[in-house]
Image (cartoon, rainbow, N blue to C red):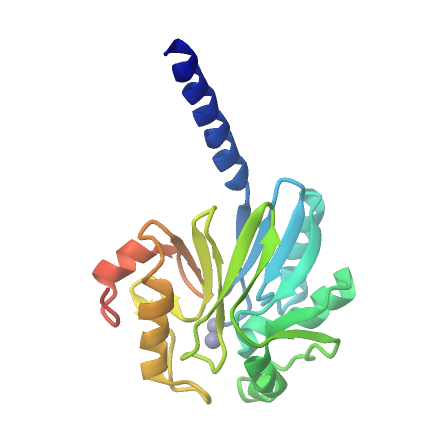
Length: 236
Ligand SMILES: [Zn+2]
Ligand SMILES: [Zn+2]
């Protein structure tokens, strides 16, 4: 009996440690460019680092990003865009040149990426588009990072092939412009569809655990539970 209790105690300790280890991913948020876009770095305890939606536009914003990576001894290993609206892709070329990373996107966002410089001219924020190799995905998939299986969810509607990155062990999702704190992504841009957006939110995001933290492309983080209760556009 004592043996059993000790055994259970030890195995619970190990489970707790493993859980703690899995929760070692760090999320750093930067707010960049005139459209106040959120750029995310996710890094593990080995200092490997994923870069999502580098929106750095001005030189000082690029410096801030590079300084953070340098000061924390991070090694950028992958570059991803949730979708390719201009405010999320400004820094792709810079990241490629600085760290030698290739861009990862959903295949369906390629045309949005190609159009981005044109939008830049319209908004009076011209920029040089990324022109390196593109690694594209065509369906939901997953990859390992920091001992965690990161799930890529297809969440179109705001953009034709927007994707969200769900980190189930750490309990957060990087959702781009699909879902915001008490708001949702706009659907008046080319390739957007309001019904598709609502479907993505209901079927892909609101089905995640309530405590899941949502890191959006603009504004403050929120949780799935908060949005299901308080989001005025899509009720859970
Ligand atoms: Zn967008
Ligand atoms: Zn945006």
